[in-house]
Image 1 (spheres, rainbow, N blue to C red):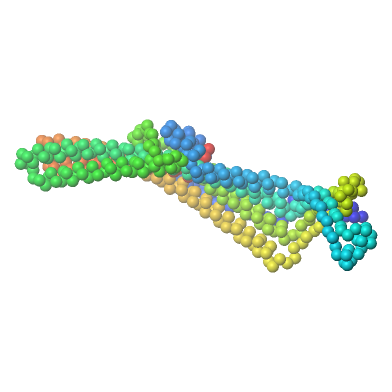
Image 2: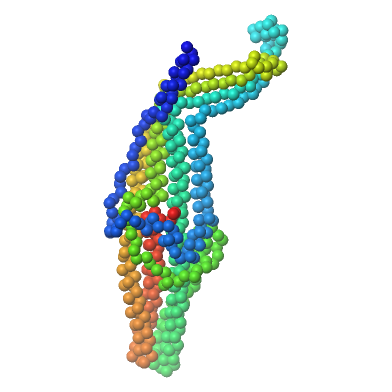
Length: 468
C-alpha cells in the first residue's frame, strides 16, 4: 500500500510538472512606422552592414581592431559573459536531484546511572555505543508549478543580456574610435590652415613695414597687422595641444599608453557616403543591443514573477538514502546484513511567513511593470537618436555646401585684396579683414566636414551597427 501511494505521488508530480501559475507579460508594440524626415527605399539599412564594409579606411579599421582586443571596458564585458555563462550552466542542472555522500563514525559513553547507560550495560555488556555509517542521499524537488523552469529561463535571459551588453559596449567603442580619429584629422587640417595663414600674414606685415618706411602708412597699420599675425600664431600651439590631447584620448580608448597615432588619411580626402538608407524602425529594434537587453530584462522579470508565485504553492520533495550501518566497526562492511535504505516524500504548503512570499510576488510584479516602461523608453530613445542623426546628416550636407562656397569666395577675395593692396588700390584694413575672414571660413569648413563624418558614424551606431 505504501509503495502504491509513493508511485501515485510520483505520477502526479510528473503530470503536474511544467504547470505554469503565472502568465507572462508580452512586449508592447511601440515602434513607429517610419523615422522622422526619412523615406526608406526598402527595408535594408546601413545599420545592418558589416563593420569593415561600412568603415573602409584601413587606419580606422586597425584602431578599432586594437580597441576590441585591448579596451578594458570591452574586457570587463567579456568577463561578465563568462560569469553569466557559468550561472546559466548551473541553472540547467535544476531538474536533476541533489546527491550527497556521507561517511560518519561516532562513539559515545552514557552515564552508568542513566537509562541509556543501564540498558546498554544490561543488553550489550558494554559501557559505550559505537555507530558507523556510510550512505548516499538523494533529494529531488518536482517542478510542479514551473519554478525551476522559470529560474532556468531567467538565467538564460541574464546570460543573453550580458552578450547584448558586450554588443552595446562594442558599438559605442567603434563609434568613439572612428569619431576620435576624424577629430584628429580635423585638427591636422586646422593646424595646416593656421600655418598657411600665418605665412600669409607675415607677407602682409613685410609689405606694410616697407610702406611705413616709405611714409605711406602709420604705425597703426603695423600694430594691426602684427595683432592679426599674432592671432594666427596663437592658434598653432593651441591646435598642437589639442592634437596631443586627442591622440592621448584615442590611445587610452584603444587600450594603449598615450602615443602618436599614425594616420595616412587627410580630412579633405575622406568621402561622405551619400546613400544612407535608415530602413524601418522595426528592423532597427532587432539590431539595437540596448533594446534587446531591455527585452531580455522583461523576460527575466516574467521569470521572477513565476518563481515568486510558485513559492506560494505546495512543493513536493522526494528523498531517498541508502548505505551501510553498523554498531561495530568489524561488521561495518558486512553485506547484506549492514545494508539499509529509506525513501520518503513530503508536500510542503506555506501557511504564514509574515507576508514575505506575498510581498516578494508583489515586488516582482512591480519590477515587471518597470521593465515594460524601460523597454518603451529604450525604444523611444533609439528612435529619437536615429531621427537626430538623420537630421544632422541632411542639414550638415547643406551647411557644408554653403560653407564651401563661402570659403572659395573668401579665398578669391583675399587674393584680390593682396593684389589691390600692392598696387595701392586697397588699404591694409581690407587686407587684414579678408585674411581674417578666410582663416575663420576654412576652419569652419573643416569643422563641418568632421561633423558630417561623425554624424554618419552616429547614424550607423544608432541603427544598431558596429557589432556585426
